[in-house]
Image 1: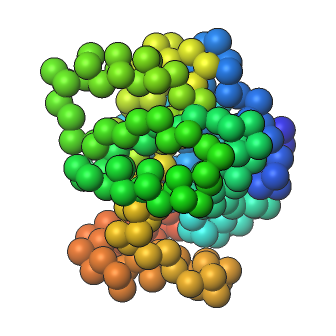
Image 2 (image 1 turned 30 degrees about the vertical axis):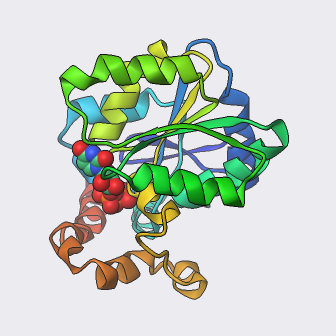
Amino acid sequence: MSKTECFGLPFDDAEPEEIVQRALELIGKKSGAYVVTPNPEIVLSAEHHSALRQALLDADLMIPDGVGLVWASKILGKPLRHRLPGIDFASMLLEKLKSKQGSVYLLGAKPGVAREAADHLSRQFPDLCFIGTHHGYFSNSDEPFLMAEIQRSRPDLLFVCLGSPRQELWMAAHRSELPGTLMIGLGGALDVFAGRIPRAPLRWRRFGLEWLYRLFREPKRIKRMIRLPGILRAAIRERGRS
Ligand code: UDP
């Protein structure tokens, strides 16, 4: 699959359908597999967080999420041709998996949210089996019990929605314990699937303004958003160096 490097990270830069097809092929892999969906914020943190960087590099698929990455890649002179928001990728994958009557486990978000997301998704995809859910505020001591439950369920897909960097580190640490399962790190996707946070209207998304819409809906994100122009500054610095 065609790759485009951005800040030393080899993004899979292909048409959404090709990415989804590759993801379907990863289901059933004996070593286990995981997908990361880095946005500018994750890429910036990986510059200083070596374990996060390694977890991104070890992923089986790396999908660019966020228009900021496309802008930064243009400054770097190696433009990403595609971007695919994690939530759109997940929805497309569920659509494809339904003909195989696949199974899905939802992990993450506040207590109750994953269950609500499973209820919504089962109505949308009645042919899929939403085999289990667990909230994302578990402690280290809860982990063996949680892992045993997921292993018993043997899902085709495991959505890991713990926020970054926790979700990427968790997937990298547990891949080998979940043979056959494809894990996907999806940030706040369960809040959206549960209907607790609305997605930006299509027109906003087309213009790459989903981040602005989320800021209106959740003004407390301002502290995080304020750091985002950093990706453009980092691209300008990197361009200057090369
Ligand atoms: N979360 C979690 N466990 C944690 C910290 C966060 O399950 O220890 C959840 C949080 O409830 C939210 C998601 O992880 O559902 C992170 O969402 P955020 O909006 O930060 O992610 P983004 O979509 O911006 O990547």
